[in-house]
Every structure is written in structure tokens, then in C-alpha cells.
Length: 183
Image (tube, rainbow, N blue to C red; front, side, top):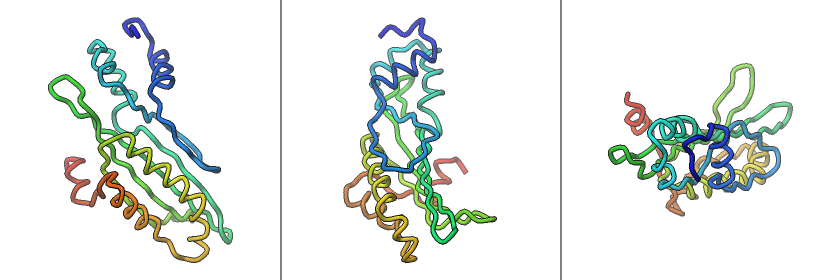
């Protein structure tokens, strides 16, 4: 595809048609942002410098995904949030890959929002991000309300076990976060 004269809207449409990953969300998920693309690095690197900068800035930098799932139990609202951040990997001026930071947070929505569970993973491949997310979609639909009712919240622990067992990524602890964020 010759992209020299294409607008960003044209590029968005092209990315959606050719590179958007397939997710399997269950009912009640609300998607705010989905720029999860399994992009062809040859295509990305073939763009002229200005276009490449604009595409990376718009679709392959910082927060690329945000979705939430809400449920209610005994008049209390709970919200599960998944967000994904991306970090490009460069060799000189050439994009050679991406790393992803996938966050999972469960909140109890009260006057003062309370975090019940939280975990973050460093993931090297977009396919692994998709596997983890599809697992969360299914687990939320099947287990979240039951876990809240039984007061057995261990979703983050189960998710950590799933990710480790399948070698999909690694848990990011607070020290790792400060290193990534430059603090």
C-alpha cells in the first residue's frame, strides 16, 4: 500500500482492516480504546519519516487499549479494568518490535474508590497480550461475581499463575515500574 498521500484516517482504516487483533470479549465489556495491532514491521519501517512518526505517535506509543467490565452485588458496584501500554523497540531508526505492559485492576466503586486487586505484566508479544486478555474476559464473566459473593477475590493471583504457567509474560513489581518510568 502506497501511503505517501494517505491521511491518518486512511491509515487508521488500513490498520483496522489488516492488523487489528481478534479479541474474544464476553458480554458486558465496555471498550474505550482498542489500538491492538499486530503490525507488519516492514510496512511500518517503509513509511517516510514524518508519516512513520505520526503513525507511531498515534497508534504505537503509550496507552493503546482500555476496557472495563462492571457488575453489581448487594447494591455495591465493582469495576474491572484492563489497560495496555506499548513501548517501541528501535535499532537506530528502525522499529524491530514492541513490548507491552498489561494492567489488571479491580475496583470497588464507592464514595472513595477502593482498589481490591491489581497486577501488571510485561509482555513481549502481541499474541501473548491477546491470550492474557481473552483469559481475563472469560474469567471475569464466569468468576468475578461469584468471587465477590463468596469474598474469595484472588483473580490477580490466578492470573499471575496463568501467565506464568503459559510463559506469556512476567509480573512487573514496583521496582520494575520505577525503572520503566524513569523514576
